[in-house]
Every structure is written in structure tokens, then in C-alpha cells.
Image (cartoon, rainbow, N blue to C red; front, side, top):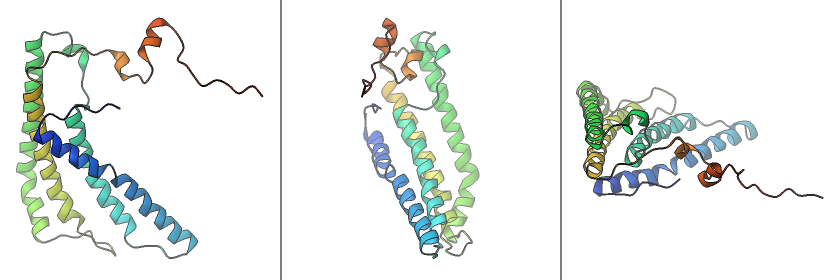
Length: 194
């Protein structure tokens, strides 16, 4: 995968989050492996692995959306977008960012009180290990949404005067397009004839 260029301080922050978050799934796999070994090999299950994996996975889920916004890899419908002139494309871009901003504002407006209450009383998960998952994840959702909104505005500003891009259905294929256009079969490894 070729990453989108980093175009400013917001992109650098998002990219930095993604570099930290890219190691988090490996951490989840490692602690789950540890749990399996402890449970089935030593018959000493842990109290903390399940909640820790939920906690880390929640953070991964949020930062993945932020990274997708920075990379401009979120779902887009190009069939109409590519058919209209550039000024319409700019209008579509403006409307999509406006929808993101409205969503972020509404979510923060509706969720701030609950997130702040959970954080201030350091609400815990209610299990044997009892980590403060609600106290940390609820505010993190709102913080991530703010950064997503800032990233969306940053993308709009940066992309505003760029040349229009054209999209082809072949862009989504992982095959070499030159070979597909010529009607050739993609090269594969030679078979071993022993």
C-alpha cells in the first residue's frame, strides 16, 4: 500500500498516532497467546487479558478511523463524483466535510456530559480486574472525533486547489493493470517439474 503524503502538522499528528497504533494489534495477539498458554498449559488463567484486549482494541478502532481520514481511504462513491465538473466536486467535498462537522458537533454535544462524568468518577469496568475502561474510552471517543474533524478540514484545505483525480475500477485491483489491459495473464512463479 502506498500511503498518502503528509501535508501538514495535522497529518503528522495523525500519522504519529497510526505508527503507535500499528503495534497495538501485535500487543493484543501477544497477550491473548499468553492467556492461552497460561490457561491451557499451566492451568492458571489470567484476570486481566480479556479486559486489556478490549481496552486496546477500542483504541485501535478509533485510531483506525483517524488514519483512514488522513489517508483519504474512507468509502467514496466516485461514479457521480468523476462525472461532474471540478466546481461540483469541490461542492461535494465541502458538503461531506460539513456533514462530518455536524456529526462531530452533535456527538460531542450529546456525549460530553456522560464522558466527563465517567472520567471524573473514574468509572471502572466492573469485573475482577476492574480496569477504568469507561473512564478512558468515553473521553477518548470525543477527543478522536475532534481530531477527525480537524483532519477532515485539513484535507479539504489541502485538496481544494489540487488537480482533479480520475478514478478507475481497476484502481481497486491488486493486479498489474498493464498486463490486464493487454489481455495477458499475470506472471506467477514457475512450477517445479520434478
